[in-house]
Length: 255
Image (cartoon, rainbow, N blue to C red; front, top):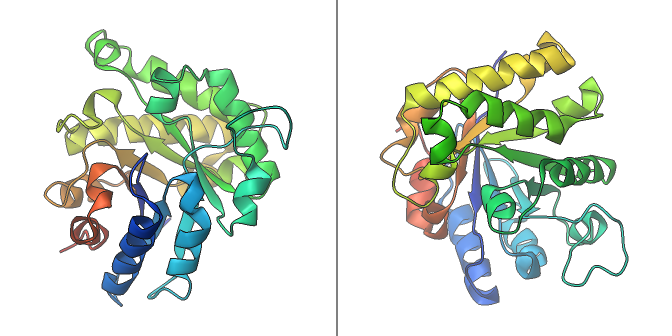
């Protein structure tokens, strides 16, 4: 099954309101008509509505906008948190969940990430579920164990249809912001393992349709080699997404 590539830019805690609008506008203006990928922008939560407005009417196809995190409760005494409903009210329809920085800096557990995935789906947001191992786990030959544990917890309790609505992002923690990148072969091996597990959980048709992105120091120089692998369906881009020129080169990954 042919899966449309997805290039998602995670801006993390960067830009102010004016800068976020300008970056989104520059990206939209630079997208080619023959782009062979969907594009998603994930700005800080205060700027979601501004970026939604900035990408409205984008060509050659709509540009997705999403949040970088969400709480699993609809409302309540959760100071500083953002609910799925709040995200939807800005016009955004996507959300990144379980990013390695949420897991390793803020202590989010596999169980918590799973609750967030279910809340996102119930609230009609498309979640990007992130999984990945640390350098210590890779060197201990535990990559598959860690990635599959995170994957199973993130998809726990979901129907096959709901699993089919989730985008997975494999992001080796040792490659995020370090300049190190998994080789295309290393990335493909883990992506293939993830797809095999999804087949066990939801069946072959769902496994064939689910998009699995690679994240970890993706740059214009390495994106073509990564996305040429059969099971790598796009990229979750960090630092390189903060510069319109660099991100547009990644979006136009075939050139």
